[in-house]
Image: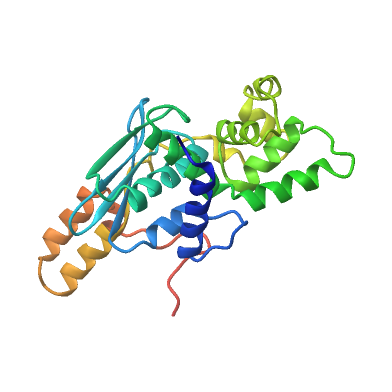
Length: 252
């Protein structure tokens, strides 16, 4: 039997461990990159795989399907963090795209991810404020605002609100379509609902890049081998340079 209270507590522990408070939205991409000896790989993994976690003796890899929406990618990272922190005895886990399905461990990872991205206190406070003293029902505009605030997909938000008895299944069904247009009409940036652009959907972040830099600095590899390592990791931006952008340039 899945213990939701335990999973909520686990999510709170990890938020605190990563330097976050108990209620605010988090930048999950930045947080996972701060983990020691963890490499993050973003890659289009097809329609059936959302991500994977691979434990090694000296380091670990978290892979995320960049072909899915940004909101779903954020959820996938949170899901894989459950495997990283709490499945250390399992060498590798490949996760499918459907939320709330699979064995108990996969469903636990989904629930953990939901609590990590949408902590109980933060979600409760936001919903309470929206409902007001008259305790009105949540409408589509409210759902869009909530998913934008916490940076999650429509699917993740609707599932969580149903679990918290804030929406009925029938109410949620009316909010599953026209996801992008419903956000655009309210003036929101719709990148949350779209996959990573094809020219940026393959990249490697975290430990692997730092390790390559350390190997070069210690003369353990040649500059040619260093560049080869980076190109294998889809980091041609480092090899060929990508420093001068609008608002970002070297400081004298």
